[in-house]
Length: 243
Ligand code: OAD
Image (tube, rainbow, N blue to C red):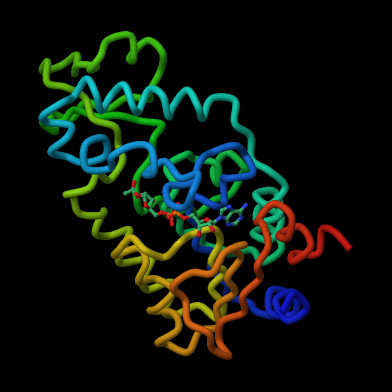
């Protein structure tokens, strides 16, 4: 499996990367599902939904403050550096991510499609036009308020009950359908419509490499090369940075 993955990554000219929370696990960020996942301990309906934000803005903002603090000082691991290297090597390597931690961009990658938004910025819930980087200053108040119109701010993350950014998700599906290799890293492939991206690739005859220590919803088939390893361990080897 590993040799086949190395060969495909080396030889294909138009690959695309698709990542989830497992990509950032070795940088210290927690995943959502599984035994150690955030959703074992916290309620997504209460803490990560648009209705939760409207009903209990203090509770929701306390949770985002905690996640922001957990992300402070977090650094991209060797797997991120490997993807940055691969992007330079190929000249063109779009990265579709469900992650909101910004680590792909922090690693120097470009053409990053953040389909679930970003935890680094916030904007006015009433859409008056105000938006800001999230800083300790802004987070002194809970919930933080819009300095222009006084409404509460919201993190620029797609909350449950909201649609994904239409252009970004449409381009992501297009990229997955038209590429010649989709590299799927660290996602349980359970949250739609993001989860449909690898299936759209497979339906269009695209080979998929999956990097994940655990089994997922992706089928057993000739087109799916499953590398059951951790992203930070295996990506440097797959892109030729390590023997
Ligand atoms: P999940 O928590 O559902 O899945 C994480 C996956 O990463 C699992 O399949 C793990 O086996 C795998 N994993 C763990 N450690 C890994 C490692 N070191 N290397 C590679 N893989 C590893 O996270 P997502 O699939 O990203 O949505 O979840 C999708 C969405 O659900 C998130 O974007 C978030 C959440 O609710 C929103 O907030 C809208």
